[in-house]
Length: 289
Ligand code: PXG
Image (tube, rainbow, N blue to C red):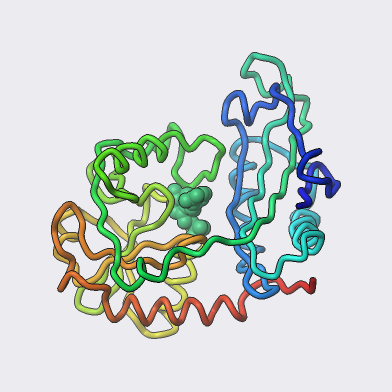
């Protein structure tokens, strides 16, 4: 396996970062999780844009243009001869001292790209749907750590994941500080009522998959709104599903013990998943291995 590390593709064994890296010491950095399908990196430009937005807020300059970053992703995929892959793009603050002052890292971030085979979720999960719960851990306040930042600090979501696991669930809904639905620990949430789609507007990462679903809905003339959603609305929705790069679109059939619709994956959800899978065959940055 070849890993991209600061401009070079090196063997996995040589891909090492200092323990003084502030990504390691403080979670100070940005990342992206991207997927390629049959030699097409799905919405790579959108992922790179989101990465650069996170870095802009964190005041991290990767010293690579967006074009160079895009080329580095493609070069890493080629070096590993991967047509279908999960790509992890990481830009950490870089090596500093034991203080948290980023100025001590002297503007030398560490840029890492890992590409690996994608482990698909079991088909059974898509046929049966998932049962999830709401947990007590709320989303970070946007003035502390805006949920739109895809930073290396994922403790908020990890605490929620731990709670879900303690209760015997794989995924959990996190609410915002006002009690409205935000998102799951690694996925966005959608509900469908009377054929119309809704998803939270704030308190969530602007998922690339979610954006694609909204584009598909528009093309299919399915009404879609981004707004405030309560748990009551989730419980009484006709369908519910989660979106994310790894999972694509996963049906949810029970939330906090309440059956969603008839307790089976919904028809619109199925249609959207099909349309999304068709989109992944044509929307992206092409490369040859
Ligand atoms: N919300 C959060 C908090 C995420 O981390 C999504 C939504 C979906 O966004 P995209 O752009 O992928 O549609 C994510 C991304 C994991 C894992 O191992 C999951 C994500 C990121 C990193 C790791 O489960 N999901």
